[in-house]
Image (cartoon, rainbow, N blue to C red; front, side):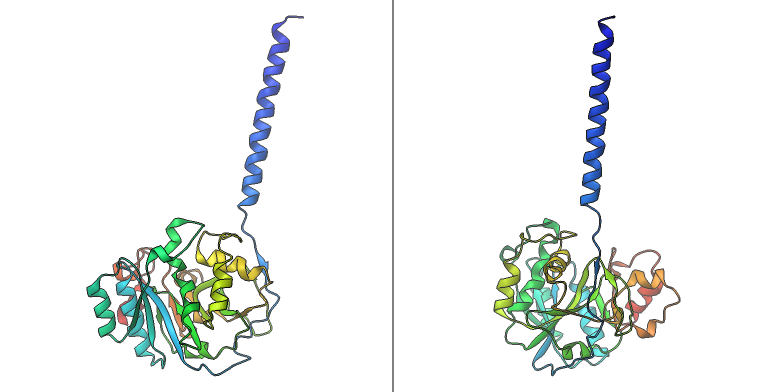
Length: 291
């Protein structure tokens, strides 16, 4: 036998083996990145059990870029006559002039240094973890976090009356759903653009202590809190419909939807409406401009 033949066979087998290894590795990586879906075991019953709000507040955050968003959010809240104040965490890039403008508008401000925050997942989402500071606001009986790229189209104060479980929250899921109270839905993540909580230092320490110990699907606070509450099968979560946190893209995906049902409209994506808005969402931009 020609001595070259065996060497060619060995080389071919090595190439095939290498390709097989790479394909298997790629398949495993793809499987590891597959979006996990959860089935809610709990009905959408946030407003079936109510409790007194007590001393409550809305909470958002501001940096240099989102200043206009905070001002517009506050204006929309005054237009719908919320009875609760807005407290704003001002992070490092918020200028002194911007903070004075917030205070002059009637917004309560509190400085939070980015160095005091922790995010072991994706660095670009560090500032989003300021939401965890809500659990430290123990001067309030209940607070509702609300992202500063939202506006209130209708009064949403009913969120403050949701009866929460110990260490729990109330929130929507991360896609547009308007289920009946007894209906269950699938979710990839909970939506932390708007969520209700009861401040507690014990809860704060418990949740912060799980940073880096549970995964974050998207590397942000939303993925982290989803994993945190998924570990107890969402037993500590009360779900409410997307009326209270509707992604603007839902209106484009479902153009037949009745806008009058939306209480809080969330301007996800870029550019933000204070920068002129995203092409294709001119209807949403007009709503923003009218506030």
